[in-house]
Image (cartoon, rainbow, N blue to C red):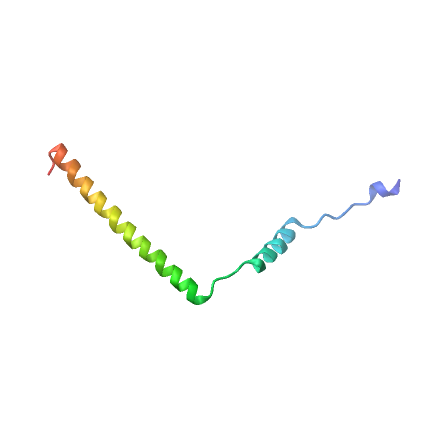
Length: 72
């Protein structure tokens, strides 16, 4: 009957989460510095190209709508 009064200590959820997170991060295949720089430049290039295309489309559609509405 004395066993009912014994409290079982549960593991701290934050500590458990931290341990599991560190364990998963050790499994990650991290890129080398060269790979990271190459991929960064690819992302920057795609952003510049897409920004230019979207800017040109916005400018074009603005002019077309302006002509249609007579605000040219």
